Image 1 (cartoon, one colour):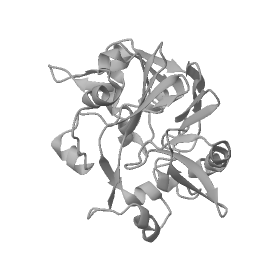
Image 2 (image 1 turned 45 degrees about the vertical axis):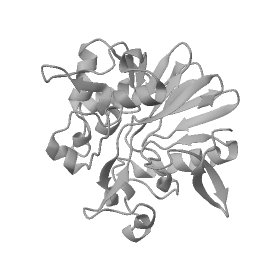
Image 3 (image 1 turned 30 degrees about the vertical axis):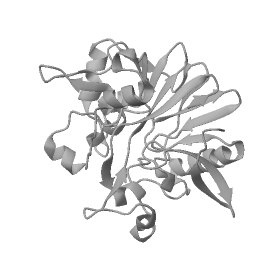
Image 4 (image 1 turned 135 degrees about the vertical axis):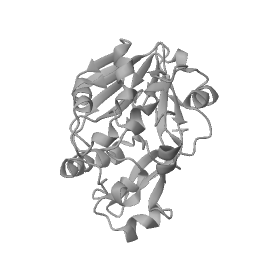
Amino acid sequence: MQFGDYRIEIVPDTEFRLDGGAMFGVVPRTLWAKVCPPDAENRIRMNLNCVFIDTGAERILIETGIGEKWSAKHAAMYGITRRRPLAESLRAIAGVGPEDITIVVNTHLHFDHAGGNTVLNAEGAAAPAFPNARFFVSKAEWEHAEAPSERDRASYLPENWQPVRASGQLELKDADYEVAPGLRMETFAGHNRSMQCWRLDRNGQTLFGFADLVPMRAHVPFAWIMGYDLFPVETLEVKKKLLPQAAREGWACLFYHDPDEPLCKVIEENGKLRAVRYETEH
């Protein structure tokens, strides 16, 4: 779609599944199962909606999905149902290949956001998947990824960023910074201390990427917060600030993990907020 003078494409990586209880924290299963029906293993459907932005000067990819370096055992554990590689999806949807991407942005380095940063080369070693790109991540997030806590250690797989660091392509950024004109990254504590959300402002329009702050449409209600969040009370406070603002100002909202309608707008009805499909002609 055209967003101001930039071209935007949503590039889904693949469906996968995580435990529904973990995805909704203190929300009872009787409530979340109505909107996200679980499978026999209590897992819910999710996706990985990467975003391609062509500014004219840069070809930017925000997030790289879950990657393709998984063993059969772990692919089954996460319910990964890949129809095609991310590179093929990029070509089919955005009309570009990995070699055409000039900037890759990771909101944070969890495996389901940065897994596609690298691919296995002919020798079976992880190597950068985007050979001509600069990779951006906040310095604070990189430091946390290098020394994670026991609680989130399993979410950080060094093969997703260390080869990019070794190649000289990784650039460590401030807590808030500009990627390109109108495209800014801002750190919001909650999921962890260093995850970032992204905001694109063009011609009076705003497109906001919530990353794991609001991973799916189902997480719009303030108290519907992931059990994975290290600081859920801070997640709550940020949601109470950003979601009403999104509704007031008519933002387009990108929910990275939503399997069906990742691009939405937030509306208020009868004192409650909910996400509805964003009509791209806006």
